[in-house]
Image 1 (cartoon, rainbow, N blue to C red):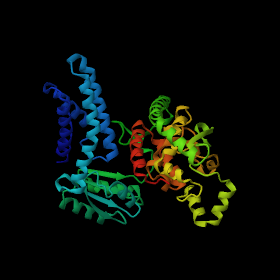
Image 2 (cartoon, rainbow, N blue to C red; image 1 turned 90 degrees about the vertical axis):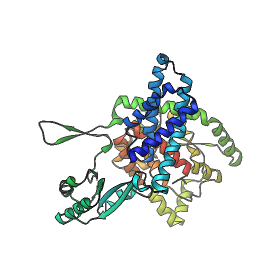
Image 3 (cartoon, one colour; image 1 turned 30 degrees about the vertical axis):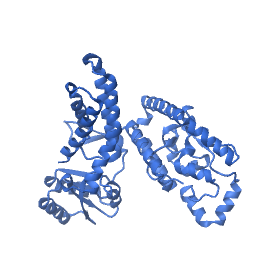
Image 4 (cartoon, one colour; image 1 turned 60 degrees about the vertical axis):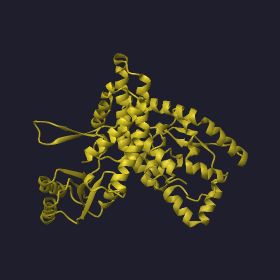
Length: 434
């Protein structure tokens, strides 16, 4: 039923735009080409919102390029093709999001959902909350089962549930359970369920993990690729960063001029602040930001922290303060909207930063970064990144470097695009900003 539901949404989007643009009926095959590419990109599956938007945009671009390449042969109006493509992107994302929200969350239609049994231990509960929280974007009807151990009795209990109810899948999140016990459980229950999802309790850079199998061997080999260390990927990322940053800089230039004037008039200071940061290969560069702080010496700030133990404790953990006394009234607005970071587009164009990457760290933070610094200096720091869309200033220093290490090991263009999409949402919602 979920496939039919998705098909209905996509047909609604495509047919609506087809008639709005007034494309002739003998070109109705274009609609089916788009549908085929939606199917090819896996859009009929249960996906989280960001992945779904990315695949939807990708499928639309592919469909547009294919139709455009045939336009000169079959004499389709290229202007109408472009309008059709733009409408699909503009209203398609909105309609898809709204209808899924209405039918899966608000109205909560049961026949669109799939029963899923979630088996987890105490430490594995965190995975369940992050993947299957209140949003329920996957449309799963979750039944939880917490276990302390895996043995014959637990296997029998789970199999009994699987036989009595029509579960579409079993999700296993068993962090403190021995891997051999997890394999044993899978072996016992696989006969009674169509699909098993596993949160692994071993760490690999899974995003770029591939399996290699052989007819002459019974096991498989894991292949792990560091995509950000491949020269062609580095060139592609640099080119994309330059083009997108240049476009964003040109678009935002009028706003930047206004911000510059406001800071100059009201704060009577140099509106652009330069600070030394650590870049690729450990080289120092000057990061540009709009000035959001008063001129307070290091000694004055340390004196403030010593007088305020709670602030000092917060600084030691997060390297940030929610109520920083140095931030100006204009600075608070700029920080909450992330507009203070617009001048960093110049850093990207100069080749010192990337649009997406790890946070640009201060020289004095190198020591605290520990082994992560070896990964960090392999890439350019970014204006936004995985740290920005996963909690931002609410993350501790240690949590940030763990996330950024994961990003470097698992990088792909697809991940960068999804981070960019999520950054827009995070900035608009002002979550984790101060």
